[in-house]
Amino acid sequence: MKTVFTLLIIIFISIPSFSQEKNTESSTTTYYLIRHSEKDRSDKTNKNPNLNEAGTERAKNWSQVFGNVDFDAVYSTNYNRTIETATPTAKSKELEILFYDPRNLYSEVFAKATSGKTVLIVGHSNTTPVFVNAILGEKKYEYMDDHDNGSLYIVTISEGNKIDQVLKIN
Image (cartoon, rainbow, N blue to C red):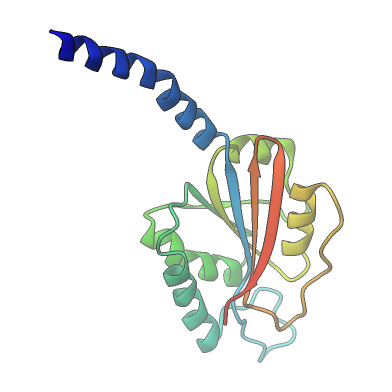
């Protein structure tokens, strides 16, 4: 009887910490932002090119890089090159690609929809760093070089604190 009573007290004391851990976990938002992979540059007049062979290979590699990341959502602009970059990762996670408007980055609606989630966002050399800046609330990053297809921006928001980093994945 004494053992049962002790066990019940331990369980009772532990319940608030379990619920606190869950709340802390769900209040953390993590954004992974990348630029689309290498695009086909053979037709300068094509405003919506597909990925070239190297880009298709990089898109597959991104899905391996993100193999252990439990994404809740994958976002892309509605362009061939970004969709093709997002597709291998979205498929591997069994997620549908959601679209965002590159002229309306990190809106209140987007922030609310992604709060507490882990999200991949695929954009462009001019939108990806601007998106990061919008999340951070400061102008920290400049446009990416037009041939930079391997930068990975990670922004984590937890309890109002924002932490960012940039990794080069080649």
